[in-house]
Image 1 (cartoon, rainbow, N blue to C red):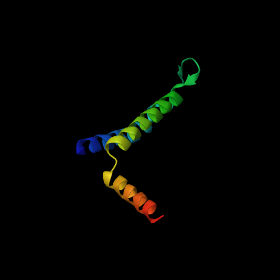
Image 2 (image 1 turned 135 degrees about the horizontal axis):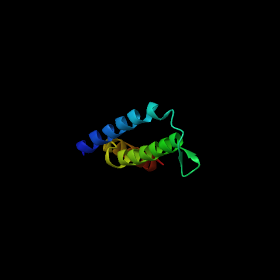
Image 3 (image 1 turned 45 degrees about the horizontal axis):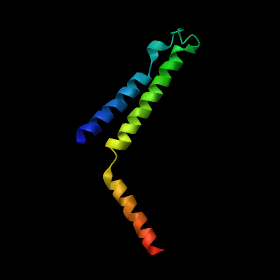
Image 4 (image 1 turned 90 degrees about the horizontal axis):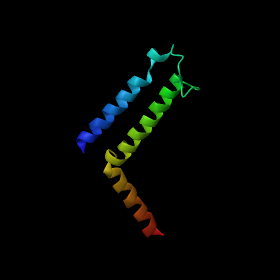
Amino acid sequence: MRVMKYLIWGLVLFLVVIHQDVWNWGNDRLVFGFLPFTLAYHAGISIAASVVWFLAANFAWPQHLEDDAMSATENEESAV
């Protein structure tokens, strides 16, 4: 599991670096004939970021936070 945390952090850092796309500023190509390339590029980064967040939530989320939340919920339910 520890390897997955480092992999996810690496992917986050990679996304931060490629998000700074100074090499595309002058690009005037169109994707699918109507979508500017830089907009398509950022749409792709957004999709990649959502995949990385999904991986982080499923594989690198601290279990102790979930355990604390569950115990707090159980304590509240038993107090009622």
